[in-house]
Image (cartoon, rainbow, N blue to C red):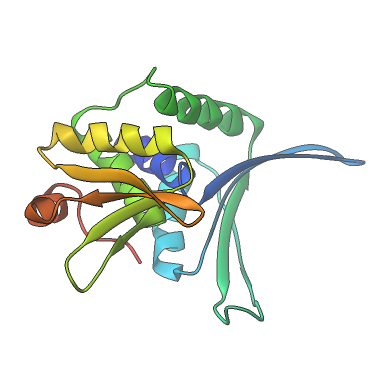
Length: 177
């Protein structure tokens, strides 16, 4: 269950679920694009073990911001539908993972949308205010207090209270980046 929760956490952030329809038919894609090869490889291992499918991986060279973009994706209508449903249920409060699954979901989201500054501040950013409220609820399961979410340009930030930084790193872990 933890690997599933981690994958859902990533899909709440940088991951995407996409349905393409063209002259060849319909394609249901579960995909991650990121600039960290370690993160993409970690996610690829999880999605592969979970689905039993071997993801397609490739690198795109971009002219700006001069970093390669690593991609890993699978095609599966069943996994697309299942993961879409779990993502929707989590955001709407119809599914709340507990214990290790909650930890794994937050870890996936943190790997995807989080930052840990040299000043020891941990922030989680996203455009979806309801999603950040749900992440804050999960962190509260572990006694981790948060400030926000508060608006920043084009998104919202959820800041882990500085008194809870050590607890966050102990319970959730460091970024796979």
